[in-house]
Image 1 (spheres, protein in one colour):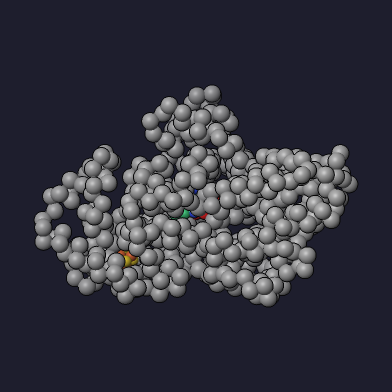
Image 2 (cartoon, rainbow, N blue to C red):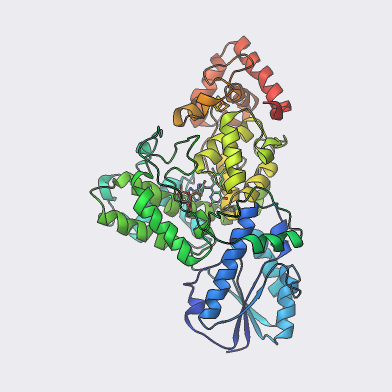
Length: 512
Ligand code: FAD
Ligand code: SF4
């Protein structure tokens, strides 16, 4: 074998990759923490720490297994801080004759590595990360000739193709493909929610390194209680904890919101999967094994809801990303141009739902999908915020935010900036949805039932103002027909009031 350099990115921590099956002295693995990756957006401090610690643990495991590894920490003198410079130097210093890498999941890095290889005088090859169920281009083939890219059909096809929760080749287990309707309970204090699994680990060292390298971050960190798993062993513990403690009510309270419960019955496995320390296949198989052993206690709706998120949504979003990039990143169908309110960076607002969702995001680098979609995203869309600003915030703040999954969820599902590729209608609501799913409104300065006056819930005005402002965009959208006809029937005085108050909110969001 030629002297080979194999490059591994920070979100490619798949210890079960076929690369590692054999040890070979002619193969050097290379990983690096670089300022290039810490600065393309302002990341949450916990996200940077979690990625660096996970990369370090991964490199140690490879070394323990007998592989040759070169690892640059962020403050190593050797570190050139950008990918091509680091790679060129190693290729030269180690007389490397062949270069290999794993296909990145991010367009930016894909182009960077392709360009790098085109300039190389040695041979090169790229390999699959062996992580996803689908390949990059599978979605394009699946939807070829179809009018709409509905996720549900893709999900059903995936269930059949991989024999997941199937009675035979065609029929779904339990008789239904989808138990979404039973996933909509409000949590009112019962059943009890087990304490969130956290890990005691020393993050002081890495924090000092980040400070000395002047890495700019956002968000907060509790040095004594780092909540994220940073090794495969810890990720497996989180999966085990989920199966034993949370799966039983996962589906029921998937959409619930609560002032005292940040995580409810959510798995918090997204970082473990997006860093590739766990594969979606093993998460689904382990969860199903547990479910089949405990079928008397756990209803099928709980487990189907979980499988749908991973086998359906996660793979679907990745497929859409590769199908639509690079154009997707600049889509702004609704022509929204406003600035993201400052309170997204501070948590200082009187709107209780937003206060909780923003502060939780800053404290924990985490919010569950209804907080991301129906509170934070809902407000950003109703206030017609520039999707570039919304994307930059989401891509920075969440522990699991990597562009292929952040962009499609934020710009697509949440901001409708893709004009309906991912979602068939915009996810917007007045305060009543937020009130229906949780208890934020009970302790809010604003009244969710009021539509007029200084203490009316801002969402109530913004909702109608948004439909009014964007009506031209929705005139051919059948799923918006009912709301648009309600708008048409609204008396002028009421509508004017919504518009006037919305202007106040949009012009001064930080005063609310
Ligand atoms: P659980 O609720 O326990 O769900 C289990 C798993 O399903 C998740 O770990 C995740 O891998 C997968 N999943 C669930 N929903 C989705 C989805 N819509 N798309 C892809 N996978 C999904 N997820 C990310 O991983 N990274 C992001 O940057 C991201 N940004 C989002 C932005 C917005 C505006 C919205 C609405 C959703 C976003 N999501 C993102 C999806 C979802 O919110 C997170 O995956 C989830 O909250 C992670 O927490 P969990 O592991 O506890 O998830
Ligand atoms: Fe949010 Fe309105 Fe409820 Fe206050 S009243 S928590 S602003 S939805």
